[in-house]
Length: 188
Image (cartoon, rainbow, N blue to C red):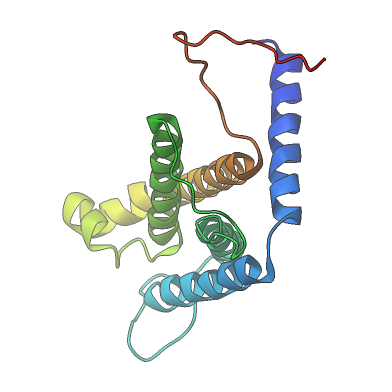
């Protein structure tokens, strides 16, 4: 696909996502805000970005930890709100597996984004997995420099999952049924 084609597709996807956001109900915005706050508090407290008496951090935070946490929290909150049906929406079961595959993909990407945020903003030597795999000096030498990359990947995954979910609220892919050819109805 050419560069122009990619740009056109991205613009179309973002336009559809914007249309879906304009159709959100107050209930969906409330769920997004509540989930974002909960995510930020949970990750912020456990990674000690929010100082607290329950957890300790051996390595100080860096400047980019806070914006990554905030952006991922907002994205995760909005992603969660895409699963909330407006109260006036009809509950219709999808006819194909295509919708469920897309939902599973975006859900996995959202969860991966959240987990990667956890690893990205956490203390490199407080992470038991990194500490066991690499040791103290390895966690500082290898894992700490990798954390900004994890943060970028987390933000991209969360953003992609959100755009795909929002797009799916206003435009869903339809696969034609080859057994039933398309016929245009003409009224006389």
